[in-house]
Image 1: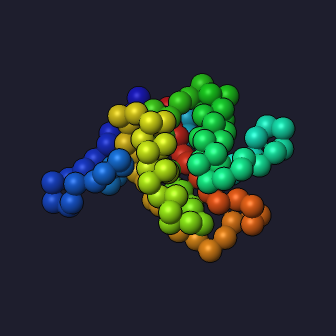
Image 2: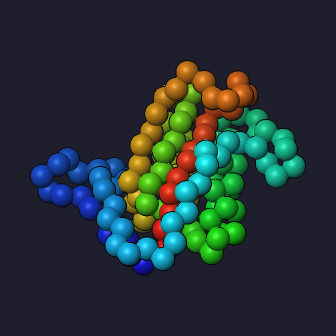
Length: 127
């Protein structure tokens, strides 16, 4: 896979992400729209942790539909409406990503497209 994670020693050591991801000659690039806690049947997961689980399931399903997995991610951007969800996001993201550490941004926002949503995640993947 043409992905090289980059964490130069001249900047602080990152946590569960990489400072940069160098993509060299990808065969395919997949840009995933922001995913929220909506299940395939249209129901919205109840509670922040359940929405995080559903978001990760949605992202996994989209990646799988294109023959990819979380190991193909090069950038993840997460939006949370409640800072209290940060520990749950980090734990669940870590379990989902495993040892792979794509570039990552986490934002706390005032709201999302529907007030019932408390988390949204968009991503980019390459092969």
